[in-house]
Length: 227
Image (tube, rainbow, N blue to C red):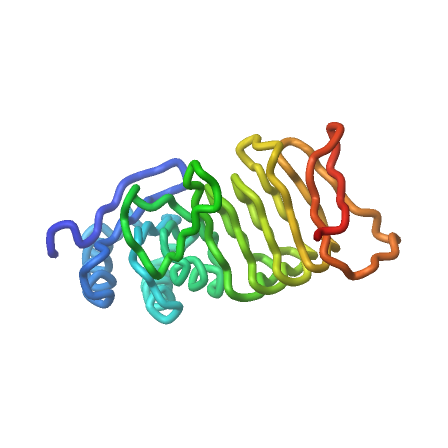
């Protein structure tokens, strides 16, 4: 097996598999399969977190690795990436998707990080609707160009902006940032959280469709017209 193509180590959640950012994807899948087959008793039943770094991984590529693991009685549980393509692929396969911060000064056009604040906070854009069961984690901001359906969840250290209908669960300021906000073109969430504050809208409340923003004011979450 090629040196540094695949690295495996134990973590709290199971096994962390870090793959090369430059090697051909099929070679990575084959090398990982060989590594597993050499110690099948050790790997059987393991839950895998996959770290692909800045590498853009398509849905079909990620699916091939997921299928390979399942044939060996293993499960791909989570994907860590700096790439929006990889995050979208993971979401499409109903996997947990965790945005990782890019190396300072690195250029990665695929991940399209944006720096709206002077401190250089990173963000990720999800260019599709998040269906039930999908979870997106980010150490920065999250923008969804689509809907967030009931049963979907977004957990972000920064702000969350939904360019569509928000009906799932959103936690902004997850690391305790009480200045974080949640915005949506249609705000009908299952649950909103900002830092340590929680808001559950009443089910029988009549809702007028309009852009709204949720923020903390007077130690509670306030939702008001956005713009």
